[in-house]
Image 1: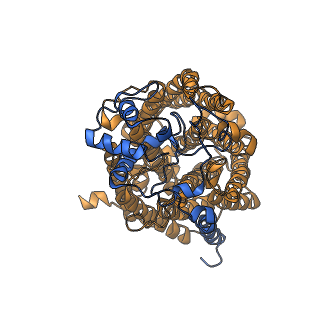
Image 2 (image 1 turned 135 degrees about the vertical axis):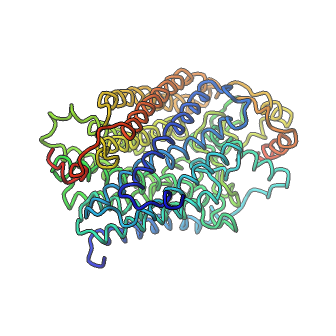
Length: 153
Length: 464
């Protein structure tokens, strides 16, 4: 396949894919803002809650990234709801990173600053507004999930 | 049993991919419609854990990309690659290995995602064993395609696009899914989010679009006798797709917590992806030059053309959303869902159109009902007309409410609910269209009129 134009194109494609991966995934690792961890490590219970969050697909409706365009002046219910803009260091060590892509429910980046543990528990269990009730969650898992949500300050 | 599973009968692997893709399409669109319904009526089926919205969304994405689109396009691609020297593909048994691995992975993925075993990523979220099976299947397919190509003397743009897609898929899966995740994932944090974005962009622009482009250009050229892309256009399409597709991921994070230079790279690449998308659309139109009056006899051709128009519109809406101004409104809104529906339903229409065109060549039988194929086409068009515009409009409404900074979030949710209802109806119609397609395909396989062996060759109908 040495003189084959299709083989050349395939090699070019493989090189382009690798270069793209390096440029958009690995090179940002060199950015100091990405490498510096700002968030405290999660407790064991909160880590279990984070897994429940991922398993139930909460990120399908809730984002965890404040859009800079709204940060600083936006309010959902009261001052502080939107909070400061998200920074790369907030996500250090998270696997998977639960930034979300679609905001059908409120952004949860600073949810613990506007809701208590009891409010969060009742919200998840009973649902509200557009959010369905998660009655199938066992009590220990609900407690884990709430513990995780309370780390989002 | 093994002899049946790995038979070397000509085109048998393409037929199995076609049957499997047709069945998975019904499941995928049912989940997609359920997810759309739950957006409009959140309490729907929420008491069942396996039907909770988060799990349904992850499943619908996985089923749509891997169960439906990939398998239908692979079926057509294997038929096309096997035609290049008229001897069939390099090895039917190896292709059958890919069929079984791919569908085993899909079944496991369906089960595991339903019970909530997931890596929690927003697209194709299956756990690592499923990814491993998919990578093996992709490597087997690449090996078959590569050796079929080496054996053949034909070289043209359509084949190059197909080859590039099959070479790209294993790389996209391995890199984007996080190769080291079971052990020590080096991509944690924001790099993990960026690798997810690389995967999402890669699956569309390095896998589905080149594969759909290669297959449709080859088939249309064979049927009309007119080449779709010149050498230069073909080269620019391939180079554009792989270069910009590999860089387009970070455009998802415009206004997000990603270094500005990374956002810029992604935004520029996503805008430039319009060029290869336009080139592929132009190639399809060129291959139909002089045959416009006969389109009324070929629903498969019209479906393919409509699919490419949808893909181009999706690429344009995507590029628009990543620009600084519009992204202030639509970032993270339903606009992204509208783009996804346009791109994926567009690719789905191209895949179905190619299946209709290749029916005599893969199944060895004439299509049973051309009228049903037309009904499929019109249902698809009605489905798009209801779902994609409503979602795009819903994104604009959401964004407009958010940037005011004073209107409660719940009001934005209420404002878009009627639009979400329209989107659900559109996806329900698309599901019905897929039902018509499946009925037509399986009826043709069962009782279609056999086509003479000579007419089963693609080249034999050139110029028709």
